[in-house]
Length: 541
Image 1 (spheres, rainbow, N blue to C red):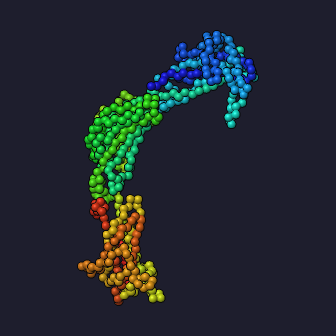
Image 2: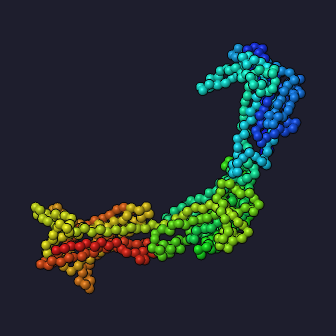
Image 3: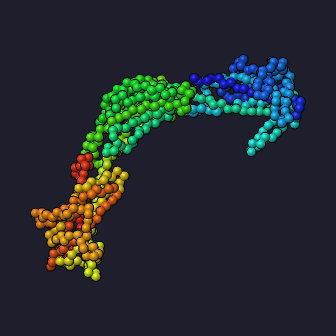
């Protein structure tokens, strides 16, 4: 509930260490905040003896029994018929208080909650209440406890009543104290809403099934409000797991409402599975739930249709589906005030009556979460460089061929340095063993085997099986190697072959190399039109 009344308590006591030092209390003025007024008959005074921390109410002295109470604007004036003597407390030998006396005045103020001094959209406001207590003592007669920055107490004399704030010439000094009260706006609703998902980037090769979505609605105001009904538009490739939707209120109570599942078609003709819940939901404020933050949770699970996702990826020749969104919207009664803090948009003109298929609802409160689908994929690459071969100290030396500066004579041997690899993208999958490297050598180029080591023996490449050589109908020589090991993400393998050029013939040779990775079934579905990595090298003689 919202409390429309505030009780204030003013405690006045004499803690002066000087024996028999009286504090002569005469008047009390309370300055009420602008939207408060006193509750008639609520002001009362009490007199207590406090002995060893235990309070005992004493008979009310006559000076306190019938004060003159008046209200002047926002001031409550309490005037005693005569000064009341608050005697100093008794102390023990260690100067600790043993017995002290207190005058306690309590009163209630009612708060105007119909027209609070709050700007539109403001949830709460601190209102300051200041009380001033007046004495007939001279300021120099009384001291009050204050504190320095290092929390060491010291005494200061009271303020002089030089301007006669209480309009009583007999009072010469006064003290004041203030306290704040928080005024809540119970005429408007305030809340925040968010939607989250446990797997925003869903990898169909890694994640087992679906996603879990959660909508959190936090009531930040002082008043409960009601969600009349809500809808949720799932992504294209997801369906609700039956029985998974639950609503948990701020007190922890969970219910599983009935859910209607159908299809929603947007203005672009795209279809989405739509979840509709028509059971009203009360979103409690912290005052009602006694929980801060006061949060209502809507949670459910979905199943991802991996076959549909793969088919879409294969159709688009892309290994990810981005720009997917799960959208949630709730509706309130038409006569309910707007909820501040949550995105509120028009529900008109979207399909047949908006998300809820209801032409009478004009606005909805929405939240959404962005999603992606990805699949593990390989990123094969191949690169070929031409090397010239020279002999130094009976050893072959391989150097990079530069067509602008280097010249190869007809009949000379050259080499091709071949690199195969896999990229370092975040979702790159290992290329399985069994991939193929293909080298197409034109007429006039003959395969001589692998390059030579420094000692003149032929180099060995354990990751390659023996080469298979065939000729095509055009007279080209086709070399095929089986790669007998996997190629992990961000790794590569290199090997070099030696070839000869044709004697007595000046020409341009065009050789081609291809890398044909072994693919899983999922990878094949994504590579229907996949162009295997190819590299072409040109050699002039």
